[in-house]
Length: 381
Image (cartoon, rainbow, N blue to C red):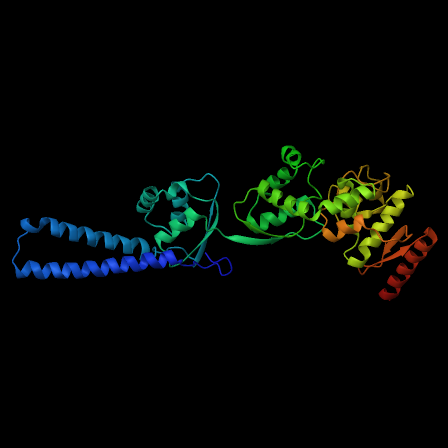
């Protein structure tokens, strides 16, 4: 299967088999014609030529079966030109063939199952999603199943999503069960085996584009995403974390806050500096996204009463960083957490266009807030 076009791609082996089958049929026809001439010329009788005729009949039968198996497309009864079939882990040949039959791809099941057993292909079926196109032959179907010619999809996980949001993307794109993925992200054995000191993997599922296939397990996806995190958070960044007195978990927590506060690359180190400065001054971080993360309905808009929520993630009530990351940050946010700008800012306020005004004192901050409100009211007029 061509991954870009989604069409069945005939390999060199297919062409070779087709050529040999055609040659066999052609030679059989010549042999049969020659035998007929001899038969009538010398008035041979059936008994004297039983073996000759039997061999010819066998060759003709085998050639016809080769054409049936390798050359003739399966009768297509599906209502689409391409039909996806999902083979799950542990399914046997009978179950897969029944799926093909139900999809209108493989009307005759028995011969296919027999050939699978004779070739040993029934023991080499790979799980995953297969796209079968109209015009495909029986040999090609069996070949795809036995070599695992499965359909892959590029799945993009943006920066700043939570485990639950990532689970939703994976469900839509490759059919992974959302609850199963969330469970994998909380699997204590998996977390311990990877050497991560956290109750779950929030923050460690690195945002990227992954080439995944239907049928891949949640644990496999989690390991892939963790592998990307390990590549990014290399030895140099680990050394830097020690230099600034933060453990990896706290760095990721801080990076997740930066990721949620700003999408502007130039602002990330400045936002980081604000949080670092407030931590050094033992000030409450007062980060809105941490409160949003703590809310049960996980909405984007905050109200004054929300700031009173009793949660360790509420940085309006509890000093220091939250107990864990509030999303899965990207590389730029991680770098910003480790390398804050050398500024004295302690406050920032959103302009409303994605950017922020930064201030070093409360008076400056209050003035900035007043200025933004005034500009907003003028725009409404």
